Every structure is written in C-alpha cells, then in structure tokens.
Amino acid sequence: MPAALALVLAVFGGIGLAVQGRLNSELGVQLQDRIGAALISFGTGFIAVLVFATVLPSARARLGRMPSLFRQRRYPPWYLLAGLIGAFYVFTQTVAVGPIGLSLFTIAVVTGQLASGLVVDRLGLGSGKKIPVNGVRIAGAALALAAAVTAALPHFGNSLNTGLLVLLMLLPLAAGLMQSVQQGMLGQIATVHGSPVISTLFNFGAGTLALLAVWTVQAAISGQAGLLTPQWWLYTGGPLGTLVLGAATLSVANTGVLLTSLGMIGGQLVGSLVLDILWPTAGSLVGAATVAGIVLTSLALVIASRPWRGKGWARR
Image (tube, helix red, strand yellow):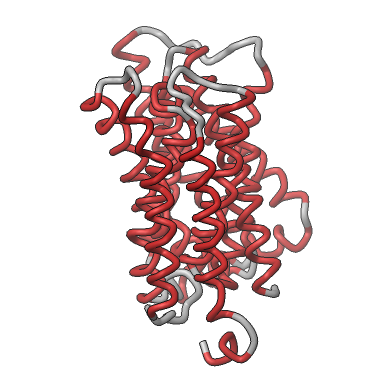
C-alpha cells in the first residue's frame, strides 16, 4: 500500500476513534456501568469481525492456516494479548471522556502515543523493520507534543478540581503509552497472517474475554447485570472500533508506528473538536488554543512524513 494512502487511513481511523470515544462514554453514563459499557463495545466488535472473517473467503482461508503459523512461532505468543491494551483503552473512554471532554481525553492519549511511538519504531515492533530515530522524526513528535500542551492549558482553569483533572488524564495517558505497543504487535501479527482481519479478531477476542471476566465478578458482587438501553446507536462503538483497528494495522505495516500515530492524532483532534462542539459533555471546552493545537499537530504530521518520500522510502 502506498504510504500516502496508509496515512489517509490513519487519519480516518483517528476520526473514528473520536466518535467511538463519545459513543462509549455516553453508553457508560446510560448504563451506569463503565466496565459493562466497555464489554459491550468490545463484545459487539468481536462479533462483527468474527462474522466478517467467516464470510470473507480469503479471511476464512487464513483462519485455516493459523495452526501452522502458530507452530512456526514467527511472533511471540504474548502478542496475542494485545487485546488487553485495547480493552483498557475502551474502559478509559467510558470513564474519562465525560468529565474532562473528548478533546482533552484525546490530548492525553496523544501524549502517550508520542512518548512511545519513537521507541516502538526503533525496535521494529510494528513493520518488522527497525526505523531509525532521526532529527526530523523527533522534531515532528516534539511539535505534536507542543500542540497537545497548547490545547490542554485552558482546561486547567475550569471548574473541575485540578487534582481530579490530572488523575483522569493519567488513564488515557497510560492507554496512549500502551497503544503504540499494541499497534506494533497487531501490525506484526497482520503481516505474518497476511491480513489485518486476523489480528483484529485476536485483539477483540482477547479483550472481550478479559472484560467479561472482570464484569462477571463485578456483577456477582453488586447484584446488577443490566446492559440494555433503548438508545440503540450507542451500541455501534464496537463495530466502529473494528474498522479503526483495521485501518491502524494496515497503516502501521506500511508507515511504522510513529507516522500512524501522528495520522491518527490529526484525525482524533479534528474529530474531537467537532464532537465537543456538536455533542458536548460536562468537561468539553473548545477555544482558540484547541484550534491552534490542531494546526500545530497537522504541521507535525507533514514534518514527520518527509523522510518517507521518494528515495528516502526505499532506503528505509
């Protein structure tokens, strides 16, 4: 896949993440059950990708070849636990988006992604080849981090307690740190199996099992197990997540984790801005600093993309 197309996929994946975050947050509010909302999101996503994998002939054929590939050990077995990271990310959406707003949630995730993306690429975790850390890539990441800080500053002046704000930001920050690792693991699984459908299936399967175990214990302790709401559209976050993950996995395999993260950052920030305006939560705060952050992030994406053009791509 051409690098430019892979970057476009990453941007649309970021927009999808913003929409998914708002859906999952609202579902958690309606159910009054954050873990249950995360379970629904992952469970419906798992069902959607399982149906797709069994209906699509090429994906079904690759499912049949999985046992032989497992025996070859072309990637560490613990990569199959990447879904636990995705489950944690979805859980943070249900907990933090409402109180701090989607834009600030995205900023915290972005900060984590930028901190870990360079390291993951340097280790060759995503594409199977080590991508050197050069000055241009560091400059792009640093500029995107500055954009995140710029957009975050006004939020420290609102009515939310500063300590609670920082605490709520730590959850998506941790999710962002681990997300780059997850993208790299799933990118390598997709490369080995020849399809992002397989890696997406593994991701949602592991995450669903983990969330189901936690939710079962919670339901047994609390005696409450209701997971239904008449607002049916809130259940679309899981299937949307499968599309987002597939786009990210394809992008990682062709551009590396850092550029995928930057593309998704741009999509997330734009999507978050639009949603905070059209569908705000209690913590939503949109101003000039948010717009400035989006502009700076877009510039960071252009800068970090430069080494992949022309002959530079072949040398990498």
